[in-house]
Length: 323
Image (tube, rainbow, N blue to C red; front, side):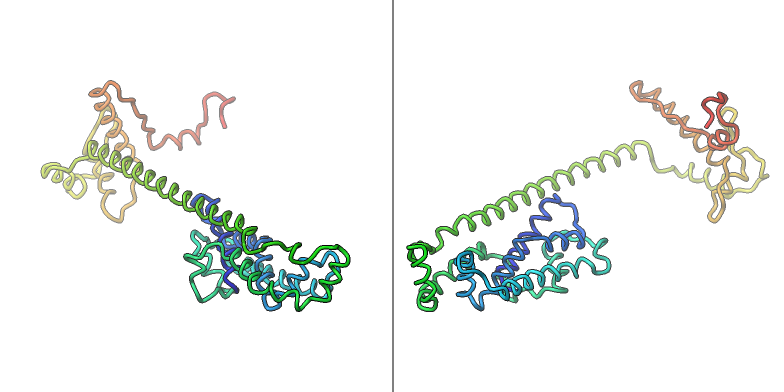
């Protein structure tokens, strides 16, 4: 593939990724969009005609007057389908709908399964406005020979229109192509500005996330503390100590937990509802104490472990609300 077409493909991919604002794009979506790009098809067709530039300029300049070759039209259509079919094959590859692209390098690595990009990497890094410069170079190089090779046709053209070929073409040294180059540079400048803006937003989001994490850690450290040696000894005795299974280890009002239930906290054991229920009772008690110390703090509610069982088994007391 020529540098000009490769450059257009890159611009299309970068425009697609910029439009996603940092969100990944599937390879299927990318290839489908590239397959529909008229800019890519036109660039690929123009590159294929450089082997016969005089005929290409003749067709584009005088085709409407003298007619075009059907064979030439068929060849152009074949070239357009050639690049389109390459993208279609890439879109139909296994995994293209789930595999994502987040950068031009990702896209290029995938496209190289069907497309051979130029070995010279200058088009991919620094070169700008290559399509405009290629067109200008073509006219500078080949226009002086056009009259000699197409002299019979130019004479006929003069007879019909009364206009000389140089007067029709005018000064095509690149001035009329500069808007194209300016547009490409403007797009690249806008893309770079958007890239910088996205980078700033990402840094701001990371800082906000770090602040939230630090605040969460600070709040967690205010609620939790390390056990003292005496408290660790109480925990070990409650879980691993000897005694009857129905011995009440701790009570809070009408709620209590027995030694057998505490033994369920040993490794490899199944928890029972009494342990879970009493844990919620302790959380509720701590919440009550914290709200008493801080009047501005809102109370939390802890449902008992058998709440869902009772709700599902007995339902609502009001038949109209019973689901």
